[in-house]
Image 1 (cartoon, rainbow, N blue to C red):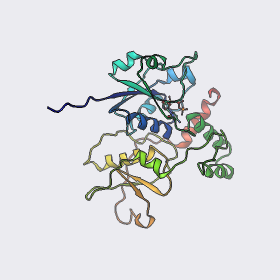
Image 2: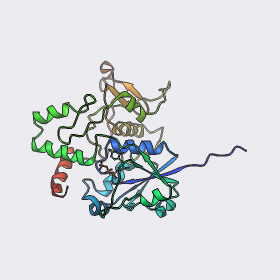
Image 3: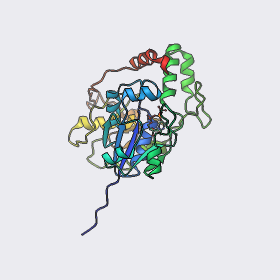
Image 4: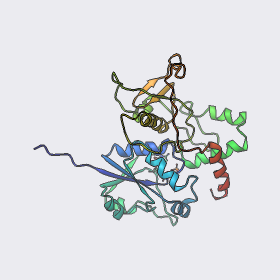
Length: 287
Ligand code: CTP
């Protein structure tokens, strides 16, 4: 009989606060190293202790990580320091982290133990995006009250290889079609497939996805997946994301309401960008 390939189980952990495409890119790279991805998310208390209070609560962060398409399972309240005991408890072969060093409050590498045991793998950290940078941008936004000055700056984001954030000096992640394709499935739409187009600014990743379960027959679920993919990255260059594939946006084809093919879904969450800004202001002193 044919020998079945052993399933490689992977572990990632982190704060995953204000989930951004750097986080989803990390989980995408991790998943490509094995078969089953478990993500441990730290509690608010642990994060406060080691690096200051998160903007999103643990319950919100659990939901957001669970919604990312490469995540098979999450572990709520995973310890800040990654131990062999944790990897063994969840039967994981190794853990994967971006190529930046994470330290505890007393300066110790949180991955020292798993590194020593050879159960540590690294993926590339995405340049130009971080929670700290997002928090900074949002505070500046409120200061300038969405003024033209801020708009002028944001318009220059990511344009060209030398583009820099006006606030942090960090070079901005360049969105290319090649990058977008890495986030999408390589499959072409087949005759009979339902193709769903989802449009939006997708400025901040919020909790829009209570469930991620793939149920082919439920159209709402397919819409959710579309949003999930769209939220896993920035959309650019006239490319739109649909449930399964990428398609070129053709404005003359998009008259969904007129043609009776427009559906609304309930995101189950009404948190606005302004609410998030308010939270940041409330704990600003601690950043
Ligand atoms: N990560 C990444 N690229 C980024 C930001 C984070 O690959 N731009 C990865 C980290 O290397 C880690 C995982 O995402 O493996 C979770 O990171 P997290 O614990 O949430 O915190 P930070 O690394 O501090 O992320 P940020 O600076 O955005 O808060």
